Each structure stands twice: as structure tokens, then as C-alpha cells.
Amino acid sequence: MALLFKSGSTRTQWWLEEFKTQAPDLEVRVWPEVGNTAEIDFALVWLPEPGELKRYPNLKAIFSLGAGVDHLFRDPDLPKLPVTRVVDVNLTRRMTEYVVLQVLRHHRQSPAYEEQQRRSQWQELKQPAADQRTVGIMGLGVLGADSGEKLVNLGFNVIGWSRTKKQVAKIKSYAGTAELDAFLGQSEILVCLLPLTRDTEDILNARTFAKLPRGASLVNVARGAHVVESDLIAALDSEQLSHATLDVFRKEPLPPESPFWLHPKVTVTPHCASYTDPRTVISQVVENMRRARAGEPLLHTVDITLGY
Ligand SMILES: NC(=O)c1ccc[n+]([C@@H]2O[C@H](COP(=O)([O-])OP(=O)(O)OC[C@H]3O[C@@H](n4cnc5c(N)ncnc54)[C@H](OP(=O)(O)O)[C@@H]3O)[C@@H](O)[C@H]2O)c1
Image: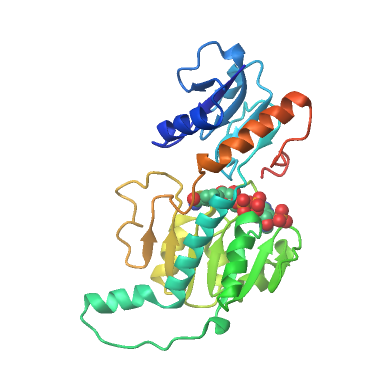
């Protein structure tokens, strides 16, 4: 019995050290050196090659190495097994730090002040108070709700949009397609924290941008495929949007020829808003392996029909 491990980053060594400390008896096979595939009964993976996971005849469950699972469901041959994702306080906190940092940056007009500095221009800009600023969070799940709560604590007017209605203190909840325009119409800073599914792909498009208040800004920390890139550039160039902070892209690493790199109204970060911390996540993996073997329900399963 062994765990297949594939990490999408340079952190493999860090994970292996943590496995040794926290689960010394667990046999971990690091892709692509997997040995006999029949000996592998669980997979903890990020971005597996399509068709890879069907090669393991005794797999009991698939654990996503991240909070998102779109990297698994892009595989048409994904085995029909329980799929879990990471829900972890450190991942949530890191994401909230990033969202709060970027919302404050937009709210306090940092891109405009940075531009003024480049021109040696000393000019104070009119600054609305936090309660005069509405932050709209698309996706009021684990990450969106935590970011929203922290922004409420800073005094912002926070609203959220999700598939079903939510009860989060002091955050007005909008749900479904019928309430999308009402939500967008107020969102001066729009934060995308949706999962990538058939329903949400391309959702940040020309129509969506046109519904936002003029001069709104965007923070996309979800997935690159939520954004229609040419529509975003057009919305920035026409000043419908004043700035976009993008952490995720259709193609990662972002190719050198991407217009986002040099666009004066775009901030690019290399998909670093948050990440899965082996210090706290390995115990979840070990617990889920125990549960699967005991026939008990797994922690943090995703709904395969909804895709998140
Ligand atoms: N950039 C990074 O470093 C990074 C790191 C971690 C995660 N992420 C991204 O963040 C995403 C969100 O993570 P999470 O843990 O917060 O997910 P989650 O708990 O599953 O929350 C997803 C939210 O999106 C809503 N939603 C889903 N489909 C929708 C639709 N068609 N229309 C409206 N709302 C919809 C859900 O509505 P209901 O509540 O009604 O179900 C829920 O509120 C992940 O999927 C991942 O792509 C990025």
C-alpha cells in the first residue's frame, strides 16, 4: 500500500521531509518513479497528466494537493472515485492576507500614487472612507467568506455572490444568475474566488466588466480561465476598469509575450496568493487514508457533478 505523490512545484523535497517526520511509516511514491502501479491505493496530486490516474487499478481515493480540483476534472479519464481537496486554516489565512493587501492597495489608490511618483508629482487624491467602498466577492466559500469577514472588520461594505444564498455576518448575499447584475452593479472592487467549473469559465468577460461601476478594479485569485483576457484589456484601456491584480492565468507561467506583463494598469503575481502547507495538511491526508480504509466518509470531499 502506497501513496502516489505529484507536486506541481519545487516543493517536493519539503513535502518528503514532512512526510518522514509526520508519517514515517507511510510509503510515498513520487511521480514519475511510481514502481508497481497496483501497489498504490491513494493519490495526492497536483496537475496530473490526463490519463495518468487510470493507470492505478487499486486506487481508493484521489486527494487534490490544493483547494481547487479543476486540475483533476480536466482529465476525461479521471477514475470515478471520491475526490477530496485541501481546506486548511493556513491556506485560508494566506489567501486572506493577499486579498486584504490587494483590496487595500486598490482602495488607497496605490497604483495611482506609484504612477505619480514616477512623474515626481506631489498630489493628494480624494480618499473615500472604507464604509464608502463596496467590495464584491464572487465565491463566498471557505476562502471568500474568510476574506470577506476580515474586510468587514476593516470597515468595508462587503457583498458576496455564490450559487446558493449564504449567511455570513454583515455580508449581503446575492445568489445565482438572477442576482448577478445587482451584485456587479455595486462592486467597486471585485474579488474573484470562484472555483473553475463549466459554469464559471470565462465569467470575467466584457458583459461582466460593463456591469461594474465605472473605474472599478479587479482582483482575480481564482483561476486564469475565469478571465476573457482580451475583454479585460479592452475594459482597462477604455477606463471602464481602473486596475486589475492578477495572480492566476490561462497559461502558467505567464508567457513573456503576454500583454499583462507590461500593461500599466495590471499587477501580476506568479500564482502565489496562497498555497498548501505540508505542515498542516499531511495529517488530513493520513486521516482520509484511514477513513477510506475503514469505510468512513472522507473529509473535504467535492461534489463531482458540480465540479467543486
Ligand atoms: N491563487 C491561489 O493561490 C489559490 C489558492 C487556493 C485556491 N484558489 C482558488 O480559489 C477557489 C475557491 O476556493 P474555496 O476553498 O473558497 O472554494 P469553495 O469553498 O468551494 O467555495 C466556492 C464558492 O464559489 C461559489 N460558486 C461555485 N459555483 C458557482 C456558480 N456557478 N455561481 C456562483 N457561485 C458559485 C460557491 O457557491 P455555494 O457556496 O453556493 O456552493 C462557493 O461559495 C478554488 O477553487 C481555487 O481555484 C486559488
